[in-house]
Length: 248
Ligand code: NAP
Image (tube, rainbow, N blue to C red; front, side, top):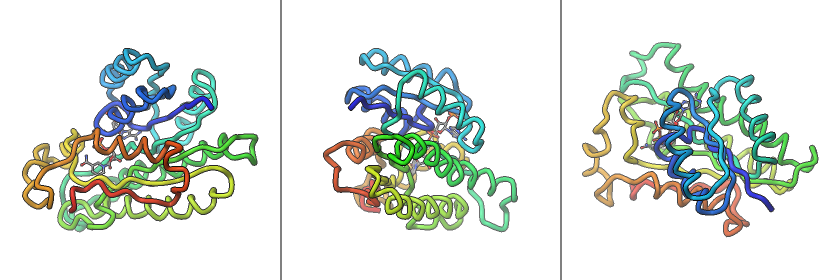
């Protein structure tokens, strides 16, 4: 079967590493991004250089109209989607809950919870045999924060990833009889630009001593698990979580 993957937030970090690995595995690829077109096109050039058919599409995953536009581009330019990676995510500035505004909390929940649920909905409308589809795979990019809670940093973010974990469990059971597997990865402290959003770009290096393995992770180490979960090698895995936290 032709492999067509949509990676939300594919322009940097874990999403970009996943796009490059997907190119090496023969996927046709849609790299979604929100603001940084130059970064998205840089990843696009890298996957093209690996011989993959690919497109870069700007869309906000917290807005259903834009999600519909995104999936339409995939339908028309790459063919039927077989794999969705709900990777796009955000976090607010490091703060206690009593310092958080409603708009910041809503922004986090809309991007990290509403986005993956809506993207999954539009993937299921294409993958499920109920609608003429042939099955498929979804991987949600959660976080070790779902287990740890992120006190004094961003409990709203941790709660959003807890919700994503519960969504993963429920959806995996809902779709298990329809040839659609749903799994998640929970990265720990990974070297990406994500930490600048919390106001601490050097966060991973600073916290390395708290990681049992003694080092932060690389985006490629997370991408390997995502691509494995999407592959036939993981054919009996659904509702599964892979922690990539260096033992944290
Ligand atoms: P990153 O380097 O900050 O990249 C985030 C990506 O998401 C970018 O491509 C960004 O696009 C995109 N994005 C953000 N909001 C979006 C929206 N509303 N719609 C569409 N795209 C959006 O992050 P990362 O570290 O690779 O993280 C990827 C995922 O892993 C996230 O879900 C994050 O929560 C999770 N995670 C990361 C770590 C870590 O230590 N890095 C740990 C645990 C979990 P633009 O650049 O165009 O805005």
